[in-house]
Image (cartoon, rainbow over all chains, first blue to last red):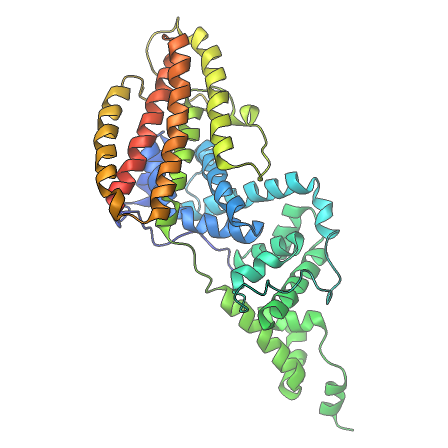
Length: 192
Length: 226
């Protein structure tokens, strides 16, 4: 599976095509905040999607979008153009989000501790007042944090088992187990 | 008993099913698994459902770009604030829990910038020029220290335009804009107070100009979207 790059083609708030990604990135690297704003407008939806799916929480995702772009600004000097800007930003975003998850959960090892047994109910059924048909994003949000993280990184963002194992400090076999469990749980949610 | 019956007696393992669905099953096991699926409706159905889930994932949409207009002013404020603080960002960043409200984050950031600007301003008064260092201390940037007045004039005109258009805007949009304006105004008020106490602090002047620019940009976005 190929790792997914963020946001293509570029779109701006005013539907003005971005002249050249390279040029805009270069200007941003020279300290041009307006150029960085163009990159933000181009990439924010994909960064938000990544954050929302990994964190499972809309308000946290919106706050994280800010953190990712501030971090990207701080690290712009390390972008050498060896990949698309969106791909580089994607990795910055993953790192920021994983760090946040680590802070919240204190240590990566606990990724393995909160997983219910396969087949056990993870959460109750959707509230009766909510539309009975759960959409895919909502179902992903219901996954336990560890399984959700692995699932999003692999099945949506396209990272390999080994890469995810390195990011999370877990064995590749553990990553596969999380992934399979997440898929099964999603199927149950979507079938409900 | 036939060979196909024997294959049906033992269903595919979870690893085989998942591997067939996502294409990760090694070639030496794939042929046997595919042969089983061809003869076993249960396994074939399960693999198909897994595959359908993965196909569906590739079609997940991103949100619309204009949903994030309101986040940019806060990002810009943090970036602009970072420009006048010549420390590594990691050293000055306080780890936050995600449960904090965005408003609290911004106000805290401005307060931290004020403290740092106060300290740094004392050191910088003896230095010539208004060029400031970025977070990594390597890129000179043109000062925005004297642009507050220009931004203020633009802001006033845009505010008048906003008032005229308010009646035609969705209430939720109006509320969001007003909330963000309040956040920026709070920052401006704090900076003005700090400048009143330390009028020669170049870093504070730049922060104030940056805050006015945030306000102008926010109002411009509203104006463009209307």
